[in-house]
Image 1 (cartoon, each protein chain N blue to C red):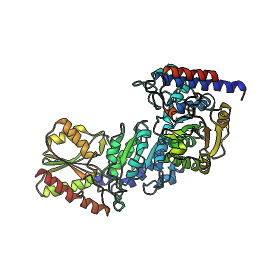
Image 2 (tube, rainbow over the protein chains, first blue to last red):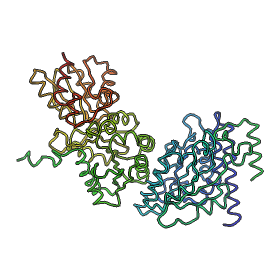
Image 3 (cartoon, chains in turn red, yellow):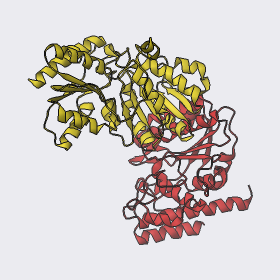
Image 4 (cartoon, each protein chain N blue to C red):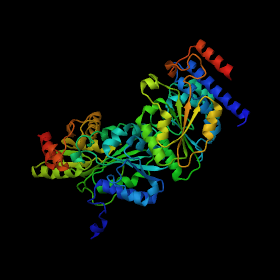
Length: 275
Length: 319
């Protein structure tokens, strides 16, 4: 990938961060900020490089199917979709308002281009498995992408889905785990140990690609990596929760926050400096 | 002779056997039909489907949450999944997937659960499903159907293909008493007045419809004129017929193989109360208790859900 291509994706990731911070400031109750800041590079690469999409025709039959399992990652997800052209960026200003298009969890009834409503954890990967089976049945060329949080790997249903993805040899399925090391209550390894996560997933028969999830080049490489024959692929994206905002990074409290204007300005200045 | 030729091939067959047969018929007709189960393909009668359409059959093993979620995933790619497991697992183990993944997303998944009620008799309370109607009728957009016998099961399945949203079809295990002899076109939301009666009307669903008809005969011997209404669509329920019957009959008895809380009886009570109809009324079924185990027929007798038990309950209501 050319330097310019990577730089452009980094710029988009930075814009997603900016939009997430502004929404955390403008949305009265605050937003799930930490787990969207951690995913900015993944969202940028997915929507602007990896996935084949047509924002002007969101139901395009040959589109890749993106399933956001961590439905609370919607603030960054929405920003990425808006930048990609699915709806105006201004919609973020109405985040969480009554009946607005965008709110805490993705809703396919209100958001054009969303495949399925989600928010309850441990649901996305089973759905992605079903969608990948449907694609296989039709010998379709499109791929299925599923974005999971690391905390939701505590849900048994995800391990059921991992089993079935390998069993049905779904090499048209790519899952990404946002391994930011925190769930709501604190570090995952204190709440409920997930490690050794990579070994467990490999042991379930998946191709595992482990990368720095906040490094665009590595994320790009992970998405571009060809599937091992007959294996679903899982990108274990090691990320920093709250990435890009020094006073949020690696803090339990970054899970959900509201910014007063001063903190928002500090955060925006940091993001601008990085951009 | 004329009647003989019109007799449905499904008479005398259990609802789950008919499910297996009609599922193959639907799959022949429509490429989008897929069958999904969790290590129960024999029990839910998908063996023939699996043989005929191996590529369109998906076994998820003993993992019902994934099975239900993956059915939603198949549906978003344009498939029409018929997913089946025991009713107790479909409604509870995979209940949230049914509600959030399927109902909320308005997906055309057909949840056809077998072994409902106490039909896995000796299995006991862990395998009895006495909450499922209540659970599914609480999901917006979910159609809830409870066939009385094999013929009605076939009629429901045949119209299910064209439904836009999700449906729950509650199937049993052994064969039900015959209620219908001829194939017919099922109309969702239409209760069927099987016989009229001025003293009491028994509103009933599922395999107990046959028992209620027998109960009406017993009541007749005692000089009680009892009607029987098959309310096989629990949702959307037939308000009009229920109001008509409640207004023209001395008493209403609902009968179901389900907890009396939030099943057919509750649905009927809601309608009668909101319509302001003054009528003697009783919900009969499992009286909010965990059930014991035993042969199915014995359980029916034990919980007063056989013909004698229903007749006795009806008699008590009108006296």
